[in-house]
Image (cartoon, rainbow, N blue to C red; front, top):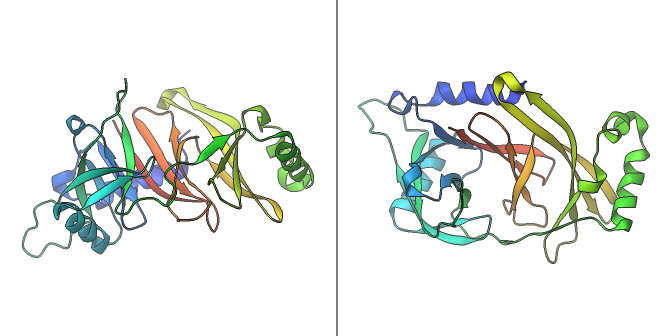
Length: 258
């Protein structure tokens, strides 16, 4: 079944989209200023970016329409952007959405490509992704086994052989992502594998929580040695979410549509 969180987001987006944009099939919603999702191919049309604060939308529109560059956080590549605001009628409140498109390098691929963009280049454009070594894996397994009340059910679903480490080249902390259970709903064309996030620092491991799908990429959204996770779920269309790890695992954005 689709999570309550997903359904709540869909309802929230439907309620805040102005009539002129109703029925648009590619939308993004981000809680932070200066970030947005967009397709790399202009043929795929705009992604309608939603912000809770209209000032954040106005900042983005001014930046793009002044010709200032934006940067794809997955690699730090520079692009130009355009923000199309809906027409404003007399007495109408400030818009909370804009149609975002970008121009720049488009990789050769069999599928449509999107990126997460920012107004400034990322401090870490490339993260070091690998497999945990024996010492790292042993320490993490010992941490999970140390608290059966907290981790008993989780321990039985973790797939240690597919664990991945994510590090900043000179970072002090390591993020470890471990696959867990698979959730399927054939009637809703939904299938996703939950992944569990741990962080290793000087004091050992901490469990941060679960993300609903597989991380497709890791991006710098906080300017430190913990990555943001761009996560995909298998659904009828595109179901992508952005998660921050700093200060606790939390969802900070979504991108979706057909």
